[in-house]
Length: 197
Ligand code: SF4
Ligand code: SF4
Image (spheres, rainbow, N blue to C red):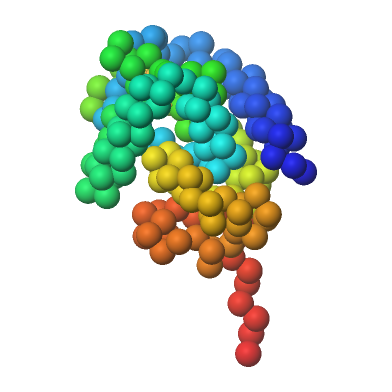
């Protein structure tokens, strides 16, 4: 399946989750401007396929905005290396999302029935389980890629060598650069089992 077909399947999976979670979202207190999930309590991990979509959207923005986002992504990487939560590079000053139509599944699955504050979201178990299943399906769909924090995945996709491995389906745990592996980035396709001696 080519990348464009995979993108269509990805949005179908987003829709599937929205349908599954609709009864639970009904009791969510989330609203525009509430953004703890984008600043202090969120973990915005994405798969490479989502990174391709987000990068395309980023390139459609004004050059000055792109430059500012790249600066923030660099800051995000530094903050993550210090094991702290980072304010998302795409969060606008009014706490709205700059890339809302193409936000990744990590953001789409999030909701809470109580304001998050600093304690994190309160969700229904069934919704969490459904989200885990959909996340797994997304990783299987993007089997030639990997998953990790958005700021790192976007950086990796800007590396021509990595991009070639990805689009030609040659990415394996061994081909993930050392710096990335040390930052919790993992291949979506599990490593081949070792052959017994
Ligand atoms: S998940 Fe939490 S922080 Fe995010 S919008 Fe909902 S209540 Fe607000
Ligand atoms: S991509 Fe958008 S919704 Fe997701 S964390 Fe960033 S600002 Fe929030």
